[in-house]
Length: 68
Image (cartoon, rainbow, N blue to C red; front, side, top):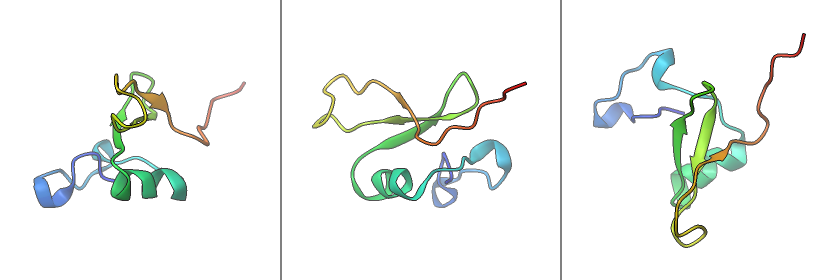
């Protein structure tokens, strides 16, 4: 998913993209959710005000973590 859509001037490089599962991608495109890149370099989803009036970011599902 492009964080800043290419049609709105967003870059077409890896720093402007993130991987989302099908459900999260659908929520972003069709249900008023937004996606940002978090401090941890993972996508965070911002729900619409109808779900959370404070629009607190939530970590995206199916996150990969580095385990040593």
